[in-house]
Image (tube, rainbow over all chains, first blue to last red; front, side):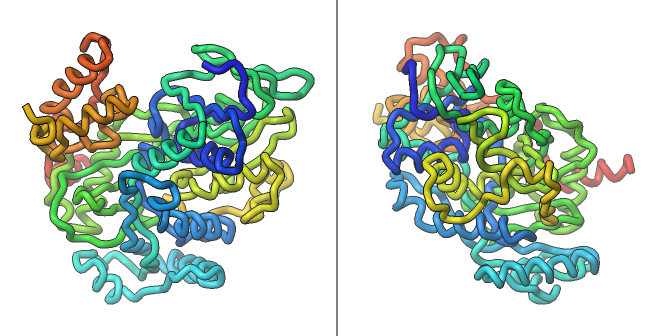
Length: 382
Length: 93
């Protein structure tokens, strides 16, 4: 293990790998990424693999739009030998109440203003896109054909390999035990495989972000919450878009490989770091899917798993410096959508560290917004 | 034996060559190889391919199979139709 680094990034998910890649591309030498398990072992590799631009806040819309524009050319830009499997066959958001439809109208207005090609659909129009959709229980829908699917493992692998080619050192199966601070400045990162002295640390630890911030006594207003997903056997292509509902608590997409992935949240989940599987999830998921998309019920599930959402009070990420320690940066609190914002996270954090002109002004996503009461709540999260 | 024509993973048609190439590139755990190739993600959930992959990793790294890990076991043990689970679940409502 190297004994010193310009920058140490904690976390080998999409945020950490994308940040490492962007910094290295801008000429920073001597970057180390520390990952306690393997690349994508945390929230990135456990996510629902969907990417969408249909958000309810301007900031999330902007981050998502820029990220999707990046993903459209990711294989070329990252010079990837494989394929990140980007499929743009849309997100169909379905509403089950009138109030939810009102929200969709609000959201689509914001999205269209920012150039996102989303639109409101009638139930008949929704049925044209997904013919077996049970519209009896629905009030309407919104749709964006440029949203879609992306393979989290291969996308992160593409960033990882590109960063490695640019000289970034990756230490997998290496756990951060502590971070030394001296005179209010980050001094070094202590791992179970050695100590790396550094002036700059990026916390990109996903579900474990609070554990890392606690090491430098920096207060982080986030908690982690288990979310579960199941996957079916692969079948012939039968559903183009992701079908998603906030009120019915469901998302379900057919992957390019043919399997269906579906998930839902549970607001009774305890706030801890468990990623075990539960039978309650399986039962609720099976009931919901057979009601909303009946033919999917005929498929066999082959695996269920779980991952962590790292939740902030307004369900938008936290980017940037902290007050207590100099040289400590946050790329945390993605509240379930860190994978889809990955490309922009790397751009934003690298610009903040290098004090460059921002591509997107994300300064409102600083940590002080919670103390100052400048929360802008994202209404559209499953 | 031709590596390119030897299928290690019958669910996702992954060849022995692909596995050996990844090990050479530094993907030396089952979890890592799984995420790049889909090995262990199909209907068999690693029951067929798991031991074969571990044997390859063992041969390349010198670690004994005992030291190597398969992926985490997750439900269900075998594939089950979702509507059967929903039907049973409704009885408890």
